[in-house]
Length: 320
Length: 320
Image (cartoon, rainbow over the protein chains, first blue to last red):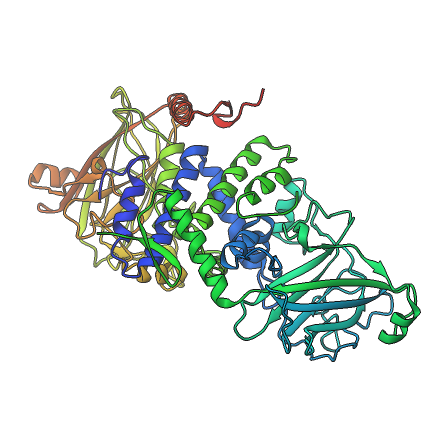
């Protein structure tokens, strides 16, 4: 390695990194270096611009705390989080699509019985949620654990308050023998992602708003099934087509209805006129997801004309 | 924007960012998003790998302090710093090549007269440095300011000590009417870049050493000339061809000589047998560098088949 030039620096970095014995890491880092160098070469990035970028990334790291992960937020607003999830958790036809986890899931939610209330905010508009969880052939899945979480009526998750009494706006439910689960909540509202840090400044420079459309998060866990991380979005939300973190998918948009039938109201202990959200979720087996992930990756490698082998479902170069 | 897929997410991110009125920023960010998404798609990056990457970057940011910039170090070990400098400060034939600045330049170096000593370390091997600075046609440049800095004999820069009396191993010299400048220093030694942080861990995972070959830094400033940031490397250093930060270039490698002539020794106040480093530097005018940068960028854009215009020497898409 010597006489480093704009043209040969990339090959030289590969050579010095080629001793790494972790083949998957070596491959990923090789692609990181290729893309970083290509980015610099094709944009003719200036020293001043690169320093600005490094200072920005430094600030992103330094804004992270125990309860705030600004790098995930950066990944979210650049669409990377959704992309990584789509690749890692591909869904066959008929299965419910996944979406971004977001930074507000916790492991402290309490178990709730079907019919219970997950949110205590008196200012929230009451909502009855009636759901079902099945496999991709429509067979009910009993005893699935379902994490549900949403903001309060002001658009804040419980963990965003410095003073609080415990988990609120979240619970873990269990599907009954017919795959059904139901609970009382409040109608979700749109809210801005934290925008007082460097990612907020970036959005502002891009003339983008920091809002997420109204939604409720769901995470499903059931033995043998690929965990499903998803959310339901309310139709006709003002931010439906401009979600700051690219989470909305057509199949996850729901039309809120109303409880119009007094029998139904009585059965679930809500008032006639109460908002109603209904949705049926379909999970996929771990095996089916693993196969689909491998199939998609193989096809992508063929399309790139790359000779690869797979280790744990992830590609590495196939060197003869 | 809706129904986000692995294939259309990139275009959707571009669309939401397209309102940004800073055209250069919009272009650079568009390329950042393209490369990030392509990296994820082509490596089939897993959620676990992406989280590991985000946690690594967070730690890089959090390792930065007033006197340590870990993101620059990361940029250095991936060859990006050298690449950005090569693009921003292209050198025409005959001009001295530049190299990485490194994180140890300061603005507190004292002015030294020609013939003075810049390093006080009694354990260092004495070195006489005789240099000349000219323009690219070989005409001497008088009154150029030359920042020089090097480590002590243990491989540490003055700023790396928590307790110290002031600047040491560094000085600002001025070329005389013949473009000459000369000083006493110590023979540079190899040293490791700071390796107790996340970048050190990365090098270790890559089975790379953290050493830089022995070198002395030089920075030239003279009105009308492009500032030259460079360094001289000692021939046959054990790390000559494996510099951790990719700084070595053939034309910057020097063969140390000895002061063999007693007249020379007497003239410069050193002992016969003292190590001797001689080098002639050639600067380029600001105008010539600007022209060359623009020419290189234009050629790169033509090679990419892109229709661009230039603003302040940097490309942006030329939209009709």
